[in-house]
Image (tube, rainbow, N blue to C red):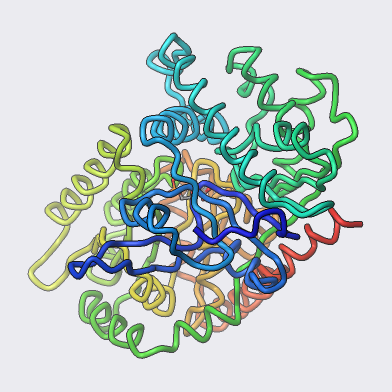
Length: 462
Ligand code: G6P
């Protein structure tokens, strides 16, 4: 795969890369480009300027692309042995570190740090080492490398040893756990993670709250930050891209289909998430059910468009959660639905054009995560919605720091409170709704992805 061998001036490393491949029936490789802030951020630089993205080969097509030595310029995929990747990604990153930072464990069952955990941890180290070595091979003298997220916490320290000349950054897209929760990790592992990250010159977080939590962990467990600097970069929505993309023909088509599902004269409460435990989809549905129970005046007058796209389905707990979301949606429809009204329209097939169509139609956006690094949906809906929307927002989402003032704020555990918030949001008048939505959109786009990335680059170079 495309390699610059010691020539890259700017390197990004992340588990999931900007592109993935499928092998077609004709045996040819078909590339699918992903979205997200990092993709648009890095496009500000591009391969011509010596930028390289190092990521995992995740699909059969990706591995085939590595074997054939083809692939996009500016992207290097690492074909890490499947068993090592599964341990590191499913075992450690998504079942341990994700759960710690989102505070998702449920006693008395979890967590259990046993021999199996230790075995998986060795794979996590091996997987991190593969990234560190690839970055060390590819980077030009004095280059900047920015490592992403909880999958790769050990890379900065490893890379620092291999290439002391580099300027190394790390950015966390998740929350950071409070110290009393973080220290449930075995002491040596907690120390290894913190020291690994402190191998960077500079660490980036999405909000002040997560940066402070990290700093407290370092103060309590490893004697402070050492020479490492901390920065806060609140990634914003990509307004220019979203406004253009949401006006394309396929989005218009999806809008017509969704309008038919909603029915004339009804309001739409929209949510769009990965089917992810931390997104709190089940409590969102429970709150909607309570709204219909407590406020019969909304029956037949509102539809909940819930888009819950499959995620991390290798993990049993995610499969169970997906089933629970589907069961509950059916239950609400059986309980309240009528011949002409389906109270919950649940879509589980990932479709970006349909998500944008729902954003445009949203009267209310429901974003109620238990904990979330930022939550870009909260930022995207106000930018795209046609008539302005009212945002019901969890105070535990990173986006709350910037959007809290103009949202209807909820405690994500409080189902009755969320039901009351939905009622309040549905009741806001058109003029106020448009005003609030405009202010939300302005706050949501304050730091576009390009600027977000360039700020980090400049801070590392400075
Ligand atoms: C979060 C993480 C990302 C991750 C994404 C999707 O936003 O911060 O690093 O890529 O979830 O999860 P997945 O496991 O499908 O990559």
